[in-house]
Image (tube, rainbow, N blue to C red):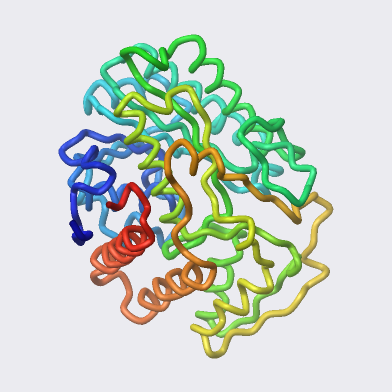
Length: 373
């Protein structure tokens, strides 16, 4: 059977009609995930402290009218528990985080509390509520102790990092590992839990400060020049839908009592790693007046990773998951979203985002990804 746009049978039909809770649903990745789950006919709820940016993808897509919108601080265990008890989710995807490296230097305590304590609160709530069948705990590729070697980090490599953000995500992984081994039976009843690691995500709707794509879009929309700190730094760029397809694949496997107690990397093949300069050049084709230059004065004394790769062999072997898009397709989909928003504003952006989700799913089906069949 060929792929059907908007088909609720994607991911084996696991999400259709299910109650799914997304923490961090007002953020960049969380809003795209919520939109995709709505597309899969899930009953979606979100838990976030606020809308983090203006504009925001959550508001541009009009998600407040398409899902249950709960507000609260992930550090507040009692509030989180009350929301879980009210909504009674069957599946939980935990994305709430302080995700900016440079902000972690400015607010290290906040970063550790949100990322480590927030993860602890989610897991502790699930420990007492075995009616939740599956939970994916999302951290970051920054959870690894990055020594900038040329091969990809595997799930068994050393955790930790030099900056507070990396350290907090390593701590979240250690907390999750302890809870998975101590309180969640990988082979029996109760909640099946696993962790997911991904990073350097780009795509339409990201408006976070101090991130290369939204910084470029903001500057070019005003006719201004972009200042680059490290144009030669390389990253495994991936479209936001890539790791989300991994999280959903993992959640579906957990629902079916597979992959519990494990950790998985989700990222592009190592051959698609490109420099910041290559990304900017490719993006600029959609912005005729785009200008940029290297600004040595913009560099800080804070260390910034120049090279970070993930090995996704485990996800391929155990989940039959791999990335779908090429680098060119990734940048083209990202640029198209921002151009559409710049030209039309928020009008019908949910429909436009849905067409991008459909296109991504169709390409996954054509390229024989198991979750899209």
